[in-house]
Length: 378
Ligand SMILES: Nc1ncnc2c1ncn2[C@@H]1O[C@H](COP(=O)(O)OP(=O)(O)OP(=O)(O)O)[C@@H](O)[C@H]1O
Ligand SMILES: [Mg+2]
Image (tube, rainbow, N blue to C red; front, side, top):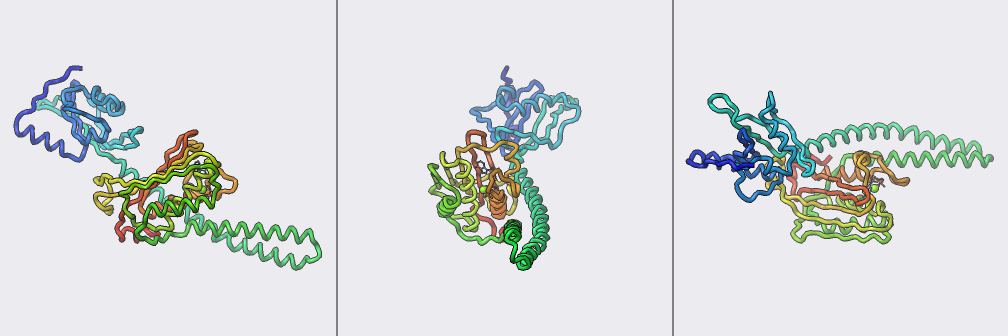
């Protein structure tokens, strides 16, 4: 497509270009014929498009070849009767959500001579909202579970005691003795499930200290090896040398990673490999909440296995309490992991492919304001 000549002269024009270039929003402006009038760096970053020179004057379809969703928005800009205000655009391959507004650029005769799109990366905001929703869901679920568990404790104790009394009344009937012993042991089992459930819904208290991630991973591995047979599975743990200690509860983090490693061992059934990687990241804090240190340093720990992977419909329910595919599992492993990570103000993400493997990614802040922690410690 033809490259349009741009006139970039005059101090006002330069000021305007610097202004747009320094903006923390993405900006893309096009002329009526679809050639680019302006693209700022943030726009390139958000859409993950690398550029070498100035793209102004080129058609937007030639510059954003890989971004079909963006091309669709820009192509429709002059046809829309009402222009969208604060719309969300999901960039699936980048796992990114952006919010944008679209405006027409009009000349003195009120003719549309161009269109401009302003947008912002909302991914982090979305993640925080998602976490809030999940917290609410778990809180109400926990309340309900605690209520039920509490109600069940008394009748279960009643059954056990009554069966014991009956045993004393029927000393001569060995059949009855056997059946009553069964009733008592089943009631005991039910009671232990109730106790475990109450344990799970109990608020978390964090003992925050300077915690060495490598230590945690080492200890977690030996815990996991005791819980699940390792077989021929190879385990590689790589911790970046620049990893600082983090403010965290050492023991509870051990539980997080031993649960994840145990799951991986169980999924691998004796053969395959597990890789654990821990690295330091600095995240863009523009959209981060005000309580997070700036710039926010986080430790990202991946627990990967090359096991069977998880089907998409199952993956959605993985963190639900009592969801299990194992005959002996309680289905509380991952909900507990999420609860602990959440209490650390961190996040956990899953990516998995059937037949290829599974990766759990735990992201934890290096430092969390102590006041934020105490507010969170639930
Ligand atoms: N690495 C993994 N690969 C494949 N499936 C997994 C993996 N991790 C978890 N899962 C699936 O998620 C389910 C829930 O895991 P979770 O740890 O919460 O409970 P569980 O392992 O079944 O029981 P528990 O941990 O309480 O003994 C598992 O039953 C399994 O189907
Ligand atoms: Mg488990």
